[in-house]
Image 1 (cartoon, rainbow, N blue to C red):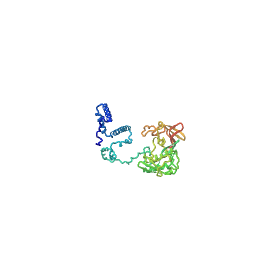
Image 2: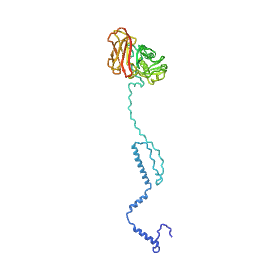
Image 3: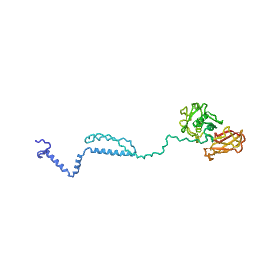
Image 4: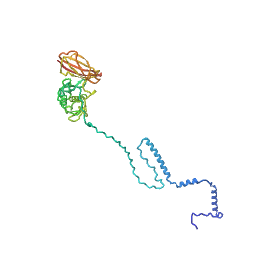
Length: 403
């Protein structure tokens, strides 16, 4: 007996085996129902399907996900968002692989090499024939040019000293020439500041608001003057902010006039920076006030001086003023309270030219009548400027003798 299970199994004789006869009849009926056709293309596709690796659909799915990620990345790039975190890997890719893939050692990401822009070749700078000026060089300070010394007088002549005068509800500076001073500029500055702090003006309408015992040590440097005040000059002194500013400007104008240099003035108190009177900061050097901050009175009488004497046949009366009101100043000359002469005049520039509104100029006055010997009082003022509540007077007066 052959035990091979793959051998054909004989159906035997249908006459002898009823089961064989029934099976043969069923097979014949199924064969008759088959319609022959062209199965070559279908068979080929089935064979290819059997040969195709099962991981191809998985890669197709991965490619689809990558394409979606690329489109999304482009959309965000156009939107300008460059801080997106990298997308997570799709789950299940490695488990769907047909055959296990050998894990490759991962290479650390390489830092992109930054492109170096070549530095353009610089043309060497030719060496100058003359040495360049030093960066620390200080230009010579400007010279004061507003008559800080009497005309024709030597440097060591009368010291210019500024005083404070009350003009109604405000304060302003007036200048007088005092005693003769030393020739050395630094020593002149010290002498002038001493006079402003401790001296007495010739005109009783002027004053020095500094307290008794006020003192200062000065030094003249390159482009700067230092005024070191004693603590007794400022401690316990109570003044308003306006007067405090004028007092500081008094020393600034006095020191720079004595030095004939319009340079900044650095203030200290016992060698240390301090706010003067609690209102004036000395963190930075202080310069002469100009323009709207000019502390000088709008009008000065510079000749004759207080208690001075002039000649009857050639009286010299002059001064300074500001074109503050249509270039009009009023003057009045009196003897024993009686008006001798009065009128109006204006200021002009050094060559007689017109002075712009708000600018300072000079003036000269000569009475129409001859003056007889006696004591006279001259008043020069700017016309009243009223704001409806107060009247501001800017004026100067001098009492003198005509001989």
